Length: 223
Image (cartoon, rainbow, N blue to C red; front, side, top):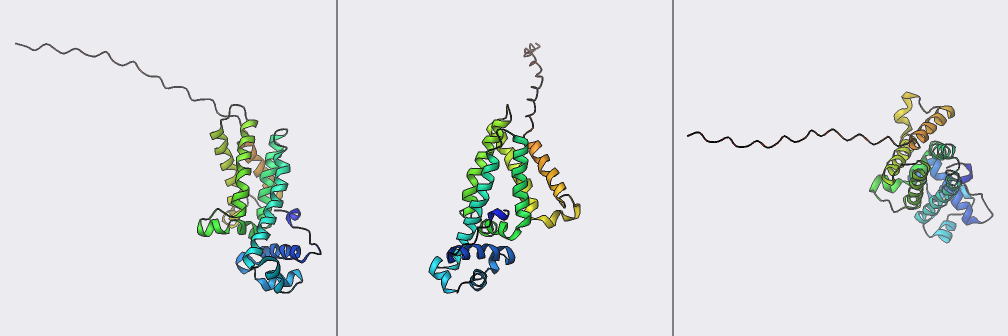
């Protein structure tokens, strides 16, 4: 997520509530985003939450879905460039995801809150991101001659995992200092893109198979 992902506040109180909910999720985490705090940040009374959304849960869901849709719009622009400039576009896409998660950690975790805690992948992010993963697999396969679909899928899983895991658990790798600066992160995602787009290895040669020994005849019995 980046600054563009934040919906522009409008005169519409409903839109102000969505923007305020996104900001409260990022500042305090989804578990600490209360109706009172959201309403105060939006400059409306608490009753407006019930009027426009009926519940806090519906407001938070609208905020999360709005932010992920904006993120996907940005990602779509980068995905569209992959056929023409695969290395730059793929590293740009991976960098966009990495920087967004690092810059907005609480909001990013909120998108997968149910997946983390109750193994529920029916929320907006898993549902809306699944087609992006499949499309990325197809784009990688098309960009790498000789790469089959299964191998392309493996590469996409590896690349996205290498982005999201250190983004969600940045403290785990903090001692390495590997992703501490923009230059480090750029080098990191470019290496991921290079690995993802590398030519497939040549097929392993078939092992030499020794000819089967001729069957040995039975020895005649001695009288």
